[in-house]
Length: 311
Length: 247
Image (cartoon, rainbow over all chains, first blue to last red; front, side, top):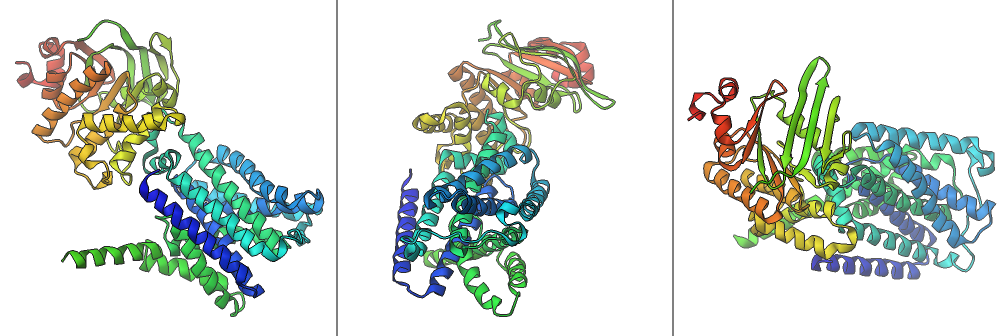
C-alpha cells in the first residue's frame, strides 16, 4: 500500500467515524433518516461507479439493490432468522445473482450491456409483483432492526456503508482494481498478457452487486416496508445523477453527489413528484456545465491555484 | 544465436473471411532464440497470421503447434499462458494508466496474486530494460509516441514471454528511435532467451535485426530464408522489395 493510499484510507476512516459519532447525537428522526439516505445513496452510486472501472454502465444496479432488500426481508420476516444473517444474506444473494448475470451478459459491451441491465431491472421488478409470498404488488412489511439496535440504527448503517466504501476503495487501488481499469482502457492488451478478461469483469460486477445488495438490505431496515416500485430503473438513474454530479473520476465523487442531491431532493419533493424532473435536470446541467462533476471542478480550481502560486 | 528447436509451428493454417482467403495453407515455424521477420505488402496476410498464432482469430483450416502440442483453436489467454505474448499495431497500451500500472498489467498476467512483491520487481525490471524508469508515474497517454511504443513492448516484456510477437513496433519512430529500439529487441532476446516475431514495414530494420524472414504474398508463403537469401530471391524482389533492396 503506498503512502497516498494509506492517507486516503485514514482520512476516509476518520470521516466515517465522525459522521457515525454525529448520528449518535442527532435526536431528530427526520435528520437521522436523511443522513442514512445519503449514506445508502452514496453506496449505491459507488457500486454503479465500481462497474464503470471496467468501462460499463450497470443499469442493473437497481435490481441488485432490490434483491438485497427482498433478500433481507425474506430472511427476517418469512424465515425469521436473525437480523445480522438477514443483512449479510442481502449482500450474498445480490452477489450470487450478480455473478450469474455478469457471466451471461458481460460478453457484450457498451449500450448493449446497458440495455440488458435496464431490462433485467424491470424483469426482476415484475417478478416481485407476481410472487404472493413476498407481497406481490404491495411488497413486504415489518422489516425492523432488533429493538436493541433500533435507536442506534443510523450509526450502524453509516458504519456499514463506511466499511463497504472503504472496501471498494481498497479493491480499486489493488492490483485487481488496476486490472479493471486496464480492461476499461484496452481489453485486448489485457487479454494478450494472459488475463481472463471475462472472469475479471464478472468479478467486478459481483463485488459491485454485493455492495448494492448490502445497500438494499440497509434500505429495507430503514423503510421497514419495501415494494417492487422502489427498485425500478429510476433508482439506477438517480445513482447515475449522484455519480455525474459528484464526478466519476474519483471514489469521493459519488459520495459528494449523493450528499448534495439527496439534500436538494428533499426540497424538490416539496413540489410534489418533482424530484424525477429535478434529477433529470441535474444530469443534463452537469454534463453540459461540469462534465467532471464537483470533483473535476475542485481539481480545476486547485490546478488554477497551483498555477497562480507558481507565477 | 538461433538453434533449431521449434517453439511454434503452423501446418497449412488458413483463414477465410467470406470470399476472401486472408491466409492460405501457411506453413511456418518460430525457432528457439531467433528473431524472425514476417514481411509482405499490405493485404499479404501478416496481421491475420499474427492474430491466428496469438489466438485472437480462429483458423478455418490447418493446425497450430506450440512446443509440439496441438493448440489449434485455443483462446488468447491460453496461448499467452504457453508463453506467446503479442503487441498490437494500433493502441497497445492503457492510456489513462501510469506507465507503472501499464507494465504492472503484464506482470499481473504472468505472476500469481500471492506474489505481489515479485510483480513490482518485474515492473521495475521491464521499465529498466526499455528505459522507462524516468516516466514511471506519468500517465501513458500524455507521453510521446516513441515512449508509448516502448511501453507496449514493456507490458509484453513483463510477462517474460518465450515468444514475443511485435506488430509494427517501429511505426512512427524516427531513425534514432528505431535504431535504439532494434538494439532493445536484441537485448530482450538475450536477456530472456526468447524468440521474437517481428512484423514490420521498415525493410532496412527487418534486414538488419532478423536472422530469418518469412515473406507472405496474397495470404500465401512466398519465401523463407536468411536476409541475404530473401534479398536475392527473385520472386520476393518482383513481388515486394523492388530493386533497391536487392543490393
